[in-house]
Picture 1 (cartoon, rainbow, N blue to C red):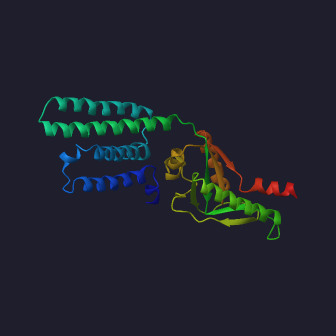
Picture 2: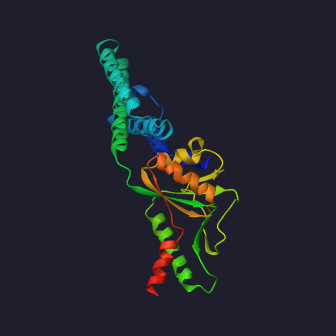
Picture 3: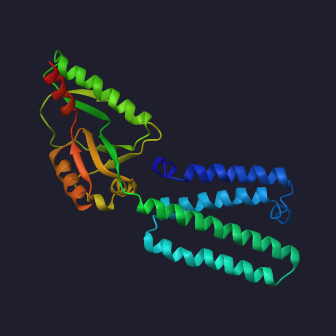
Length: 264
């Protein structure tokens, strides 16, 4: 359920729907469609709602590709052609309403198509954090390892900055398995509502999982792995990343710890 509400464009769709209802009640308490269709303010809000709806249905949920969006040209052009046909025939009041609604529908679909084409052509340049079992770990030789403690503080700040920047981050819960025996300083990380949560069995193929589908939806080219990761899961993620052109980096605070040791 949480992943559903975190889908892109869902919140704008809901907000624009509420706005459309408010504007409709304000302009015409009786919800007279004939009167609303003659008001440019209502048509503009209706176009905004339909645009958000098409983006949510086709980009976020349907994940239309380039071919599907090219075929969408037939849909919005068909709306325009039908509007011209209606304009040429029919009663004046009904003709105006049908023409206005068809043109708004065509305009919204066309705008969603332009947005999708921009997203499809935008190269992946971001990085994504995957945090396993709600924890960050820094290699440590014990509680008195001050270098590890300083690296732990820096890693915590790095997570805070990542969240402030609203960069992509997801939490993955995996079952216990073969893990590193090296002691570490642990940073507990509680998921926020805006951060998706997944459960993954490393014996399952990522291709058919919600986690795999979600990662491929993100405009990223690099995955940073943090937390409790066993060797089998790591090998799976490395292979899967290679297959999909994603660089998979396992750091776990090692870089920060090395910097602390060099500074000392």
